[in-house]
Image 1: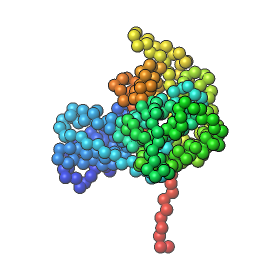
Image 2: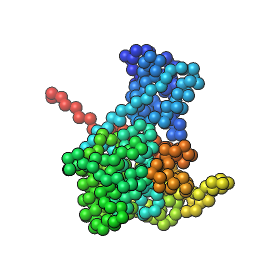
Image 3: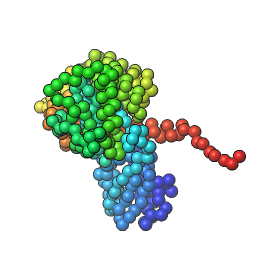
Image 4: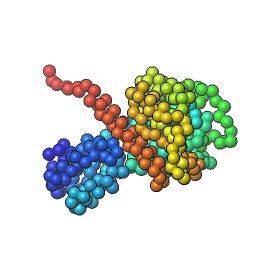
Length: 354
């Protein structure tokens, strides 16, 4: 009936179940599940769904929908990201950038990486903020040093489901990295090229703030899939975020959207909100450049506390964690539609004997 229905399964799916899978939508995004299915089959009272994306977060709501519809089967999810690697064994490279420092870019990059890992994806995180590598601290890896199996290539660290590489593993955290632009750019490229990355669905790159040599080198010499810009609603931050957007457009890198950080402060006692840095500045910037706002994050001490403790807040049972998980899901969906559109635009080459 549907193109994802397996005709050779051990048990035939009831038509009512096929209809449910056809009509059910992902919570929050409203995307039909049927658009993301590779196949659906029943094995020994277990409904096995093969998805085009890692989406473990849909298991509970989909299981509930099945139960409410009268189906008592168990649910098993798997995925196959059918994309050729763009760099070694890495399928997609996503830059997380900002025009200026202090807007929470690194915290956002860490929580996005952890959110993707929670969905079941194979995720890596490259700390490219050469002058202020904070990723080791945020992932509980402060003080860790790099290891090498052959004294040539480096093993990435692993924390909270994410493979991590950072210049912070190579330099003394008490010492300043007094490097000129070309030297810093070369160090970053070596960090990427000489790391034994495993097979990854997504490599998140925490970029240094600004639009200088390092940013241009990373944008032009890496096979970047897309970028995300982090800003606050404040006019000063928005002016610099606009420059980051302009840079990506000049080097033909797709912008998936904006993340507006510190959108508002919510009092932990009374719940009142205060727009400390302004109101919806990121939304206005996104509308101007016709890109989506992936999420608006509050100014909360829990985010800072968890970063300092080395455990991303997305891993905790807190309301803000769901915002990060929604951002992660939106990123995966946006990349999926982008890849699908690119594949449709590619000409089909047919070889004949004529």
